[in-house]
Image (cartoon, rainbow, N blue to C red):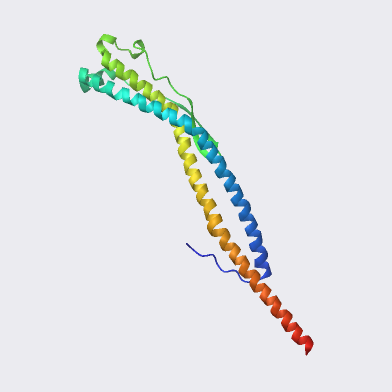
Length: 207
């Protein structure tokens, strides 16, 4: 940790240090309010995020066994052939800001879950196991798209909260105490000089 440069004991430096201390106090207060707002926002998003993660975990527990059943029934080559041709999934993104933090929201996303007719493959040719696995993973993909903006926002808010907390701690525990100590030293030095001047003036008057 670097130490602050020592202030010369002058009235001008005393005034400047007092003004800087006032600015630091206001800045720390603003940072504390920002930190409280970030904490409230995180708590507001915590329950929906936890519910979304639980739904994703539950869908994963059913999707991967369905995929294993489809692989056992048709093999990897058969599933690749049944999945052809692939489809492009386009999402409409909108940038935004939350407490000055850049975020991105999904404004519009495609419907991933399709009926058997929309797949373009006959049910008898596809097979029940492959159709079930495809449906499970389509539903999993929709859950992931729905949860993605919230997860990114949580991550950004967590990073901003950690940075703000470091800034507040740095101001309150290191910068402000060091500046107050310097102010105390400058005042003490100026007071000693003033007393010495009074003593010197008294001696001159007595002479």
